[in-house]
Length: 452
Length: 95
Image (tube, rainbow over all chains, first blue to last red; front, side):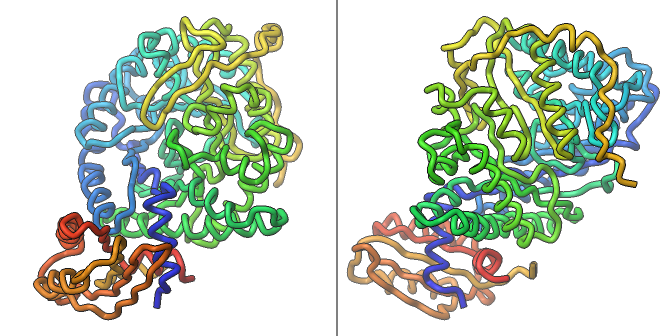
């Protein structure tokens, strides 16, 4: 029998604490869509994506209405297009991005991810074409997300690709300058990219994945924050325990949605991504959880320690609640998408350097950070290199999704709306790293990669 | 996790106390052949709070449509009425 307390606690989580499922993402393999004629390949891609995902939005909306669980986004991830398009004789891959965009629009999903390449050790010819097509593709489409894996613990860091991606991010910003460089919000570079991540912009359907799967990303910073309000003044062991208990409940909601969606769509369930994903709404912020733990502002000394504990406790609580866990699984710290983080950036209490330190202990990385539009590409490559090193040498996923906003400088604010939120332009250390980036080559894999 | 979908639901009614709340709500449930298994009610922070366990296995309506009818009734009698699948509570609160 369910107790009255449990009923009321649950209802408050949904009605007052923004508990929701962030995304149900259908992963679809496109390896059978290759063709030497690019327009035939694009036709096959469109047909396959729409055939598999046509019911995705309707089924999610039905579950949402029946169970009163908000499902914020419905998304699709596909096999990295650099692999699918490799057989084709296309000189660029913009047509492939447009085919994905059309398919996503027909299915009514929010985003489609997988305009991607995996170059952590080196480039194939196809990887090269894909990466060079990114700026134009993101300008020509609205729902397509792109990602490039630049490094891994097993292979080291491809510094040629790090150098090139600084240029590509700058070009993408220029090509979408009329919308404050929104193309860069749909482009992420990774170290150790997970192959089953349901979150954008980095979702793609890895080559080791099944034909079609359902992956679910949970959310719920508001629930954790509220739970912590009831243990003010208690020691940190109690704080960690409280986070674990809440993470368990949040994850069970995701598991329930995943199981039902998988059954109704007749598609196997892949993983739950145990991430605390904030939104710009008040009461849905990861930064505010850190403040609740005892910091005046996110970014104060102690932030990294508090975040490490939060991230670990979320995983411990969540793992118990789900049969399969994967993706990024940890706390997200995007700046523009988190109301508390936006305030901390605006009042100067958080800097990019502090955010970098925080990425050592949480999932993702330098995420949704707006920087001055005149930041040189080499500096962006330097930021990427540092972040790739944190991921590669600590055996974890890290990423960079940074937005050099053309025509804007420190003190300006950029507004994207919706889940992408708004952000003050943050100061960047402009000391040159040109000579380092120009060296190119590969940073060898760390010694602890040799585990065999 | 047991994923067999249950036909039972939890209803909550929250608002100011008034005459005839139970009559109006149980009348609507009776119309649709929804069985009431249990009712508890309390005054929580000056607010009338009622929790009902209901069974929809013989009902002539599904939970989505019933939810909409309850919403309409709720706005008529100035109460917040919501209905939730029991599966949700089992998932979150039971191992």
